Amino acid sequence: MKRIIPYVFFAALMYLTACNSLEYSPNQITDNNSPRDLNNKNIERLLATPGDDTIRVVLCGDSQRQYSDSEDLVKTVNAMKGVDFVILNGDISDFGLLQEMEWINRIFSKLTVPYIGVLGNHDMEARGQRVFEKMFGKPDYSFVYQGVKFVCHNTNSRQVNFNGSLPDTAWLSTQFKPEAGVNAYVAVAHVPPIGSDFDSLLFDKYVRTINHSPNTLAALYAHTHSRALYYPMDEPIPYLVTNAIENREFELIEIVNGKLSFRTIDY
Image 1: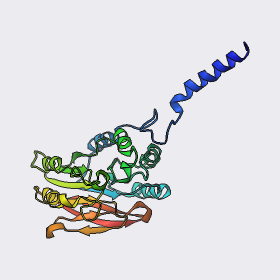
Image 2: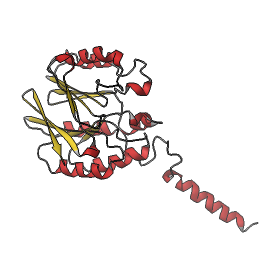
Image 3: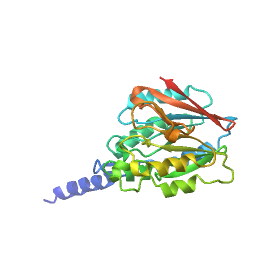
Image 4: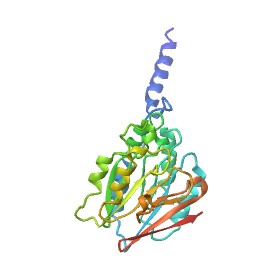
């Protein structure tokens, strides 16, 4: 019995010292190696980088389980000149798991430019929203780059059973008000307002909030796994939906002198 005790003690010690590297559950929301607050860090990096007279943004989305295609997208963007930042517009994961978001971040962290993440409906599965908030930050946030305010927000209405809370139109109305230093606005969200996953009761208020603000240039989405372009309420503001990463397309958004244009890039 006396000989067994040291071995038991040693095994217990090894278990305790290894605990920090163990994954206790597939539904855990963070671990010691998880990145934190990525959006704020990447926005700070973006704002610290001198720009030119053209804002160039890569709009992509639905990276869920598409690791090799995501790697090819990163290589394609890194070979392009003049890109300021990348928007990964939701469904970063498929099952809302920490490991999925960590895998995608490892790929997108190889970009030579900053990237920001938007919360998608699949990212809200299980405990995914808490994972996203730990790793990326709040689902509703905004930042101003070279006079353009990008308003990123949660439109995943089905995930809350269309209870009227998503999108948060009250918060959005504060974001699209006139503001010193802001010359134009761009809305960014995962689920477009056209379709069954958006709360139809909020459609009118949502579109009016975006369209009737001073100088909104566009609204940018993903989710449908196909490219689409809408002009809700027959107004001239484009609602652009990017293709899924698995279909090997993304949109290149350019803003010059307050004018926005876009084109599809195959890779």
